[in-house]
Length: 407
Image (cartoon, rainbow, N blue to C red):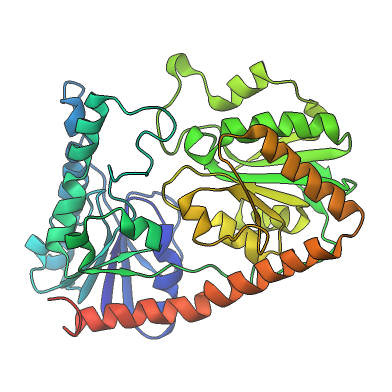
């Protein structure tokens, strides 16, 4: 089977599956805008839009134009691949971002699988959660679904990672979507009891209480302002507690602050921290990120009703004591008191209370807490391991390629 993956970034959700397929003898290629050094075993084809979204573009149409520019860029690269004799059996593309918009015009015989993460505007989702939605904002959101709908119409089948994410799509669209999580490397993240954190330039091997937080960016979508407010309170109550924050000082989802301000600088300006016990690592290599989880006394994950991150699942696999937001995507994987602890997203006092409670119970060797961490680790390793989910994903692609699914 010849499989072509398309994603603006690399390796994204497709990296582990690409390697899995390659190791089993399939021909794998990857189209991306990423400019780094690819692994030697993988054919990587780069594409780049010839211009940015127009400044005078109607604000509702920016996402559509961006998708069209991405799709056009890869279509030009695809024409060259076709002239060289390349013809994929299955094309797997990140839906709504554009790279797969026009591949059917280049390779009409290829089967199409869309990877669908989100459909905007459903009730009780991200829109209106942080602040009331404006009428203009609601109109813009409806239009934002246009490239997602184009990808859905063109694909033979679709994949969506969680039941909550699938529920955002209208019932008609769900008729050709399979809920199937990407999985995590449960073996890699398996607990290392007694592990102490020592990173380049940051030695916390002496720290007895380590509160950890991980996100790609520092933004309201992932509860960064709420987490920082709670961390400031935790530092006051627990004078030996260190806080480690992994992520970039940027916004990955949602709106940025005006005038170049960031949520990190805003928190440091408005809240009272002991900066000797507050540590920002930036983005970390995978092995260093794992070190953070393995040394964590309590790990915090917050999200509005939106796409579920991989990090809470990896934290569960690592045996972390997870304190997370009581929001729909989290409740799909965490049951309060069983494999983690849930708090109201906006209640920073309750979040601080739960963090301090975990630190206190850890210090006295609380057996109930230890059992919760063990259940969390065992449950995540049983439900979300690569060794179960990657073969299922490969089977789905083969079913589409042979016409047993979709059409």
